[in-house]
Length: 171
Image 1 (cartoon, rainbow, N blue to C red):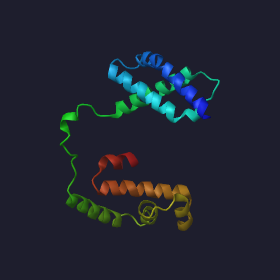
Image 2: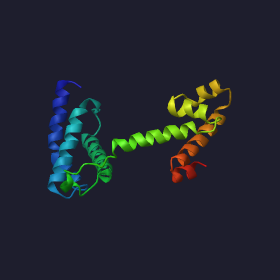
Image 3: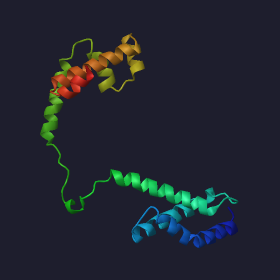
Image 4: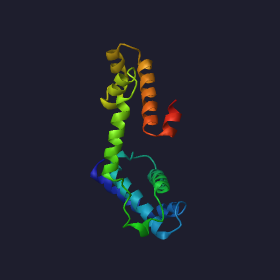
């Protein structure tokens, strides 16, 4: 877009600010929220002026940007926890490193106790990060067989480590 066209579009955007504010009121009740939505819309539009096609309606393009901006904010806002502003000093609870060391030791013992037919497949997939296809080729069996062995190994490990919910779901 040439400089002259950019200036024309920016001038038209300024003229559309009252219409943008009115449209923003459909989404927001508070004046501050309306202003924020209009500002975000204009900033996104200015950042993407090269995507605006002359000959199309600028007002429609801006309204679409505003609607999408509001929708994105709404979805993100639903994921945010409310009421935690007063709890900024509280840190998430972490388990002690000793607990992780013990769980690691328990895992090693449970892995060693795996039946011999499950251990090679579990080693390749779970610990080495080998793909199922490569593991099947190396073990000389079908991919489904490897998946079955790994699934049974996971269930055995979960049971050995006391995770009865996970173990029951896998069997």
